[in-house]
Length: 177
Image (cartoon, rainbow, N blue to C red; front, side, top):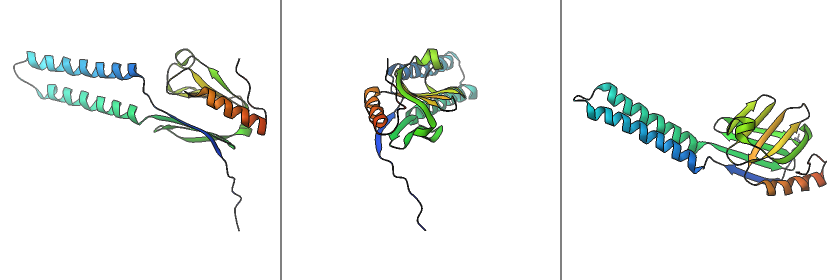
């Protein structure tokens, strides 16, 4: 017996990474400062101890892990005719939501530091945000009252997709003020 298969058409995809120059500058500065401090301490001593070597190794490994993690992190968003999916690799597996789960869907400008305390996977259970940079997001308001904001660098493109979906299906989408 054949199963019913629902085919959905992808209307929009976006992949974002942490590419802010100031973030990389701060990390590089912290690494250089830490490494230099230990090297200066070693230079002032007559004998290099195991603690000195371990300090350098730990700092080196820590920064390699932090840099590696930031290079790995990516926010992926996909809008289809059936709903919206989001993934924050490597921490958040793919989460998919059908359009009928929402009361409202719209693009809005927000203040990441003030509203959510920064970037990444932010917020509390009923009011969450997945963002990497910028100040625009897709605001999803669920029928159960929960809110999810997904950051985007392409608000105009998403707005056009949401308008098209709203005309074809149901009026979840509300215009930006």
